[in-house]
Image (cartoon, rainbow, N blue to C red; front, top):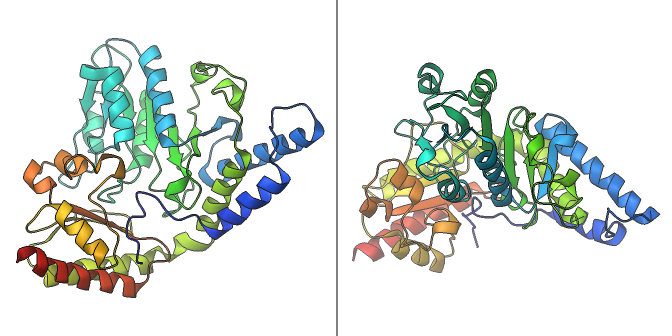
Length: 378
């Protein structure tokens, strides 16, 4: 069954599964215990940390293993809530994932300044650079949150420029790299600020992720108690899952990301053929730089909750948007943040492929959309 919901979660990569099973056999002990077998697990855990430092950048000691991006976002935002001057703001890209927006609203409320974006949702770096907004003085933005790639539209953000700008201004930066990793080259994304990611977005197991600490983040250590992960969090590290996450990302870096151009052509062919087959359908952020695997569509009629199950019956799995918010009457929060009204947002359908998706799968999806259009219209 062709699966077009990889941005929600990916199947476990074979190399990740094999790595996980081997680690469960060979290195299942608690790495914090004092006997020799545990010390060997600890050595392998630190080697995994080194692997991520090599793949993403920055020092290995700044990498912390978490349960996923949601935990990482909560850790960073809670740290900022305790440490940033009370009369400063945090600047947030309005199309961030709910795992960032929800805790930010809870912790900062009216202290949020929504960053300026263009029609595609790309943050306006020049507005940040020249607006005298960044700084640690009263009324300034003391921390910035901008993801690397959007989970609904696939739009790529200028995270490198933003990281550099924040570093020069002496303000904190958090980048959600969950959708970037495993799809585009990871090199350098760990070089500035805080970075969060979830393994299951790029072929790793669920329930494990990473947080890359910013250089000036010593206040985070010990905030939750426990002696694991350099005092940042308690609980026994799940080394088999951590190893599987590293194997999935390493394989993507070594064998997959170079295939982007071909996959991008398949996505573009799909968009062109679909807009011809279903008159009136719109591609969100069509002219922006986007992930090769992602297409956000505004259907010409009927809510997305009528399209998705009918496509499923025809053998194609797609989504209405972020899986964690798809139960909210089918309305896409990201599409709404781009200025679309609620009725339009409820006609949004997200298509997101994987490395194993074929050109025939894309063509089959086009035919399925055309068939469902006739069914829904009638």
